[in-house]
Image 1 (cartoon, rainbow, N blue to C red):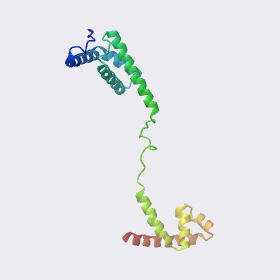
Image 2: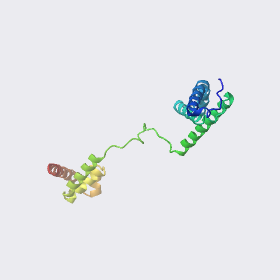
Image 3: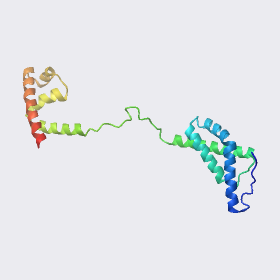
Image 4: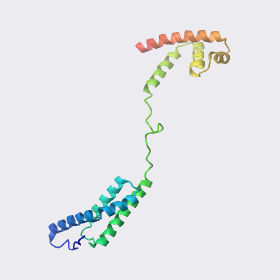
Length: 184
Protein backbone atom coordinates (compact mmCIF):
# COMPACT_ATOMS: atom_id res chain seq x y z
CA UNK A 1 0.00 0.00 0.00
CA UNK A 2 1.28 3.40 -0.80
CA UNK A 3 1.19 5.85 2.08
CA UNK A 4 -1.17 8.79 1.75
CA UNK A 5 0.06 11.99 3.36
CA UNK A 6 -1.46 13.46 6.52
CA UNK A 7 -1.82 16.91 4.97
CA UNK A 8 -5.54 16.48 4.31
CA UNK A 9 -6.49 19.94 5.56
CA UNK A 10 -4.12 21.71 3.22
CA UNK A 11 -5.50 22.48 -0.18
CA UNK A 12 -9.03 23.24 0.95
CA UNK A 13 -12.22 21.28 1.61
CA UNK A 14 -12.23 19.61 -1.82
CA UNK A 15 -8.74 18.21 -1.29
CA UNK A 16 -9.77 16.88 2.15
CA UNK A 17 -12.75 14.97 0.70
CA UNK A 18 -10.61 13.48 -2.07
CA UNK A 19 -8.01 12.26 0.44
CA UNK A 20 -10.73 10.81 2.72
CA UNK A 21 -12.25 8.90 -0.18
CA UNK A 22 -8.80 7.77 -1.31
CA UNK A 23 -8.00 6.57 2.21
CA UNK A 24 -11.21 4.57 2.47
CA UNK A 25 -10.58 2.97 -0.93
CA UNK A 26 -7.08 1.99 0.16
CA UNK A 27 -8.30 0.73 3.55
CA UNK A 28 -10.98 -1.35 1.91
CA UNK A 29 -8.64 -2.75 -0.72
CA UNK A 30 -5.66 -3.44 1.59
CA UNK A 31 -7.20 -4.25 4.98
CA UNK A 32 -10.71 -5.59 4.41
CA UNK A 33 -9.74 -9.28 4.26
CA UNK A 34 -7.52 -9.10 7.35
CA UNK A 35 -10.10 -7.08 9.23
CA UNK A 36 -12.92 -9.40 8.16
CA UNK A 37 -11.10 -12.58 9.25
CA UNK A 38 -10.13 -11.11 12.63
CA UNK A 39 -13.63 -9.83 13.31
CA UNK A 40 -15.17 -13.13 12.14
CA UNK A 41 -13.15 -14.87 14.86
CA UNK A 42 -14.15 -12.29 17.49
CA UNK A 43 -17.87 -12.54 16.67
CA UNK A 44 -17.93 -16.32 16.90
CA UNK A 45 -18.27 -16.65 13.10
CA UNK A 46 -21.45 -14.59 12.92
CA UNK A 47 -21.17 -13.35 9.32
CA UNK A 48 -23.86 -10.66 9.54
CA UNK A 49 -22.43 -9.18 12.72
CA UNK A 50 -18.93 -9.34 11.22
CA UNK A 51 -20.03 -7.38 8.16
CA UNK A 52 -21.68 -4.79 10.40
CA UNK A 53 -18.51 -4.42 12.51
CA UNK A 54 -16.25 -4.08 9.44
CA UNK A 55 -18.57 -1.47 7.97
CA UNK A 56 -18.71 0.48 11.26
CA UNK A 57 -14.91 0.31 11.54
CA UNK A 58 -14.44 1.73 8.05
CA UNK A 59 -16.99 4.47 8.78
CA UNK A 60 -15.03 5.46 11.88
CA UNK A 61 -11.81 5.47 9.83
CA UNK A 62 -13.48 7.82 7.35
CA UNK A 63 -14.73 10.05 10.20
CA UNK A 64 -11.19 10.26 11.60
CA UNK A 65 -9.39 10.38 8.27
CA UNK A 66 -7.81 13.77 8.94
CA UNK A 67 -6.11 12.52 12.14
CA UNK A 68 -5.11 8.97 11.17
CA UNK A 69 -1.48 8.04 10.81
CA UNK A 70 -1.31 6.75 7.23
CA UNK A 71 1.55 4.31 7.79
CA UNK A 72 0.26 0.81 6.87
CA UNK A 73 1.30 -0.82 10.16
CA UNK A 74 -0.35 1.95 12.19
CA UNK A 75 -3.53 1.86 10.10
CA UNK A 76 -3.81 -1.91 10.51
CA UNK A 77 -3.40 -1.63 14.29
CA UNK A 78 -5.90 1.21 14.51
CA UNK A 79 -8.50 -0.67 12.47
CA UNK A 80 -8.13 -3.89 14.46
CA UNK A 81 -8.33 -2.02 17.77
CA UNK A 82 -11.47 -0.14 16.74
CA UNK A 83 -13.08 -3.35 15.43
CA UNK A 84 -12.23 -5.23 18.64
CA UNK A 85 -13.80 -2.46 20.74
CA UNK A 86 -16.96 -2.50 18.60
CA UNK A 87 -17.23 -6.28 19.07
CA UNK A 88 -16.68 -5.98 22.84
CA UNK A 89 -19.46 -3.35 23.01
CA UNK A 90 -21.69 -5.69 21.02
CA UNK A 91 -21.06 -8.59 23.42
CA UNK A 92 -21.83 -6.33 26.37
CA UNK A 93 -25.07 -5.13 24.76
CA UNK A 94 -26.14 -8.71 24.05
CA UNK A 95 -25.63 -9.66 27.70
CA UNK A 96 -27.60 -6.62 28.89
CA UNK A 97 -30.59 -7.47 26.65
CA UNK A 98 -33.12 -10.12 27.61
CA UNK A 99 -32.41 -13.46 26.00
CA UNK A 100 -34.14 -13.99 22.68
CA UNK A 101 -36.30 -17.08 22.40
CA UNK A 102 -37.46 -19.10 19.42
CA UNK A 103 -41.13 -19.33 18.65
CA UNK A 104 -40.90 -22.97 17.58
CA UNK A 105 -41.95 -24.39 20.93
CA UNK A 106 -45.62 -24.42 21.84
CA UNK A 107 -44.85 -22.70 25.16
CA UNK A 108 -43.95 -19.49 23.32
CA UNK A 109 -46.67 -19.59 20.69
CA UNK A 110 -49.75 -17.44 20.92
CA UNK A 111 -52.72 -19.03 22.58
CA UNK A 112 -55.86 -19.67 20.59
CA UNK A 113 -58.77 -17.29 20.86
CA UNK A 114 -61.06 -18.54 23.63
CA UNK A 115 -63.94 -16.18 22.82
CA UNK A 116 -66.18 -18.83 21.26
CA UNK A 117 -65.74 -21.20 24.21
CA UNK A 118 -66.36 -18.41 26.71
CA UNK A 119 -69.55 -17.36 24.98
CA UNK A 120 -70.76 -20.97 24.82
CA UNK A 121 -70.06 -21.46 28.52
CA UNK A 122 -71.92 -18.25 29.31
CA UNK A 123 -74.98 -19.33 27.29
CA UNK A 124 -75.00 -22.79 28.89
CA UNK A 125 -74.63 -21.30 32.37
CA UNK A 126 -77.60 -19.06 31.70
CA UNK A 127 -79.69 -22.02 30.51
CA UNK A 128 -78.67 -24.10 33.56
CA UNK A 129 -80.03 -21.41 35.88
CA UNK A 130 -83.56 -22.13 34.66
CA UNK A 131 -83.35 -25.85 35.52
CA UNK A 132 -84.73 -27.29 38.72
CA UNK A 133 -82.00 -27.87 41.35
CA UNK A 134 -82.36 -31.68 41.15
CA UNK A 135 -81.54 -31.52 37.42
CA UNK A 136 -78.70 -29.06 37.98
CA UNK A 137 -77.16 -31.48 40.51
CA UNK A 138 -77.06 -34.46 38.12
CA UNK A 139 -75.60 -32.34 35.29
CA UNK A 140 -73.00 -30.92 37.65
CA UNK A 141 -71.95 -34.35 38.96
CA UNK A 142 -71.79 -36.04 35.54
CA UNK A 143 -70.83 -33.46 32.91
CA UNK A 144 -68.99 -30.81 34.92
CA UNK A 145 -67.06 -32.93 37.42
CA UNK A 146 -66.73 -35.95 35.15
CA UNK A 147 -68.22 -38.56 37.50
CA UNK A 148 -69.87 -41.68 36.15
CA UNK A 149 -73.62 -42.26 36.63
CA UNK A 150 -72.81 -44.75 39.41
CA UNK A 151 -70.49 -42.24 41.21
CA UNK A 152 -73.06 -39.44 40.82
CA UNK A 153 -75.75 -41.72 42.31
CA UNK A 154 -73.55 -42.41 45.35
CA UNK A 155 -72.68 -38.73 45.80
CA UNK A 156 -76.30 -37.56 45.42
CA UNK A 157 -77.71 -40.48 47.42
CA UNK A 158 -80.23 -41.52 44.74
CA UNK A 159 -80.53 -44.66 42.57
CA UNK A 160 -78.61 -44.89 39.26
CA UNK A 161 -81.86 -45.10 37.30
CA UNK A 162 -83.01 -41.82 38.82
CA UNK A 163 -79.71 -40.17 37.82
CA UNK A 164 -80.20 -41.44 34.25
CA UNK A 165 -83.81 -40.27 33.97
CA UNK A 166 -82.98 -36.84 35.45
CA UNK A 167 -80.07 -36.48 33.04
CA UNK A 168 -82.32 -37.33 30.13
CA UNK A 169 -84.97 -34.83 31.23
CA UNK A 170 -82.38 -32.14 32.03
CA UNK A 171 -80.66 -32.49 28.64
CA UNK A 172 -84.00 -32.33 26.80
CA UNK A 173 -84.92 -29.17 28.71
CA UNK A 174 -81.48 -27.64 28.10
CA UNK A 175 -81.67 -28.31 24.35
CA UNK A 176 -85.03 -26.56 24.22
CA UNK A 177 -83.75 -23.64 26.32
CA UNK A 178 -80.59 -23.27 24.24
CA UNK A 179 -82.66 -23.29 21.08
CA UNK A 180 -84.78 -20.47 22.48
CA UNK A 181 -81.73 -18.52 23.67
CA UNK A 182 -80.08 -18.93 20.28
CA UNK A 183 -83.13 -17.58 18.47
CA UNK A 184 -83.33 -14.40 20.56
